[in-house]
Length: 283
Image 1 (cartoon, rainbow, N blue to C red):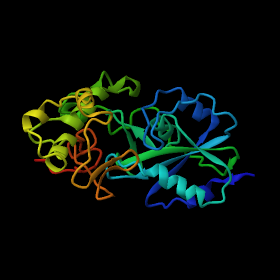
Image 2: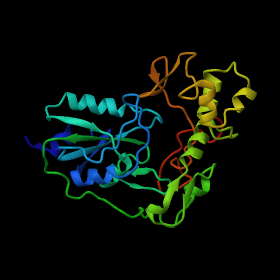
Image 3: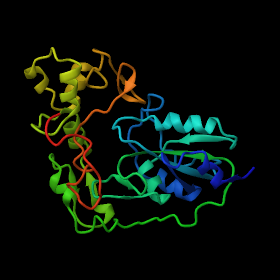
């Protein structure tokens, strides 16, 4: 049974999803790249398999998402596919950034993140694999191995990163990298006077009874995990909970937590035409 690519694309609402295509060869290229720890869907890590036996092709799904930490796109994609009659498929765990690049759905910026053509930086990515042949696939994949020209000669994200986590030795994509440890500690546990962090929100709304002195000691996730356990900050009071798929919830509803996104939130970088997801001052 062959599957027409347009039939797949049509079941994903265009205002919420962008859909791309990967050959088995392109998937193998993604599998040769390292991946982040992915606990969002099933609570555990997954291997970036270099074989993916029997899979002839894949689709790449990019979902519009303006709420940081909200990973419902996995469940939403599964629900849409389960309601379809498009044959057998499986969720693929691989390097999603590389998959988006290989499918031509976006470009890599100097902050190491993928700027998607449809939704900018505010997007989430997943990949589905099919045993059946997908036909009438896109012929213009827009793949661009070089940095998009909006990044060439521009260093706004690196200059404005408050923790100096973005390091670039040149305009070649492979020379760009981000110190994720510095980034994660800052966006989560920063005491910056104007840039919000998860810790500021947590202290104000979830555990306001804790002293500022005690909270200020939480400067890295390793320190927070030693004190509070696996996820670092316990969202367990005043109606708040932490859900590995949906992020932070208040009274069972997913809510945005404002934190540092200086590398993606512009007009610091006028060329990306983004927007701040939080007030410039205060948490």
